[in-house]
Length: 256
Length: 256
Image (cartoon, rainbow over all chains, first blue to last red; front, side, top):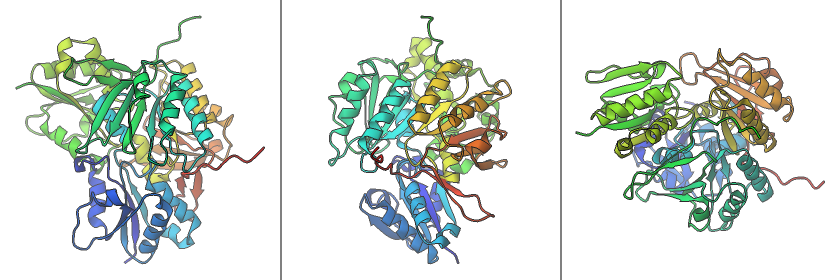
């Protein structure tokens, strides 16, 4: 029997946010490969070998998956969220391109998942209701001046901005720098949402202004959404978090 | 018993791409509201009233959902893909803000779904592996000069660009104009992917160059992905579509 690789999105955490196709691919796997906390989300069962590894070894992990598949195993590579969004899918295809030409003929499938910005947006209302972008703030893999040039461009173009990997112990200042850049372009009252661990037991969602967000703590598990100029709050009284949404319409510019 | 609104993402089409939470919300609904083809995807059952409506009446549909919920009904509003991405969630919150203040106290939940760009990316490989954006090309709700200014900005910032609503019978020229703008900024060999009806029986996925895409037909059900400068193809021989991916890394600029 010939092997295969399924690159599977586990969604934000709650197993009810997994797709049926992702669950079926997990059920069919013989080997489970991924970053420790993602592998830990998949229940143990007979016949499933688990290979959990630390972060920052994505390409080693990808090669391991391809080697196992080439030896005839049905391999599942798991990512949180969607595997194609700042996650394992690109690492696997990098390894395919650089590796054994025979790997190009392995069956490799990607099972999409609910990425963090969609999960956060759903909890908040509809903050991504207009045009939006997803940027990683990590400068481990790209120069910081590329990140700031991209952020500047999308802020000036008035897109809603979802920031992945906003901060970590090794990258403590990048989110502050990004919000400072935003404060030079967008109004201080612009809604900024910090969505941490959405759908997990330690979920914590904050709706702030841009000015407040610059003083707010965040961590690796936080997804940051910076509203566009049209992004609005609907207040619901002191007990309830406001809804946040971005209208679908952009009005015609006023004549100068 | 008090009513509620669940705004539910049905994903790209294949029921196996629905989340468990979205399925549970469908199962709990008493009234089903949405655009005709999305309502048609939900199997009929006893106790479920169906209210399918034509496109372009999103706010009427949203108000109808809120009125039914206010009268005590458990209402499901369905969208294809994710309801927060160019779909019904923003329309519902627009109606909440403009409508009866009591609507702010209705339980309104959003169940995220696999949006078209994630479904298309999963089929192709990992084209969204770097920074990316999602833009709607429809000028029904925003001026065309806003669309072109945004497109110009994200193309120059070297983001991967996912274009929603690229074309319709009433908007026949916008996709051609957008690709023409792209051709002024990105190389003619830039990969451009046209992903139609992903996961449905009439799925059709084409991997082209930017130059070829300018001559290729597309329709309302097509999602267009314009690669960034680093987006690459992995050829697999004449029988198989190449994999498409965008590496996670952006190299340091060469010294001038």
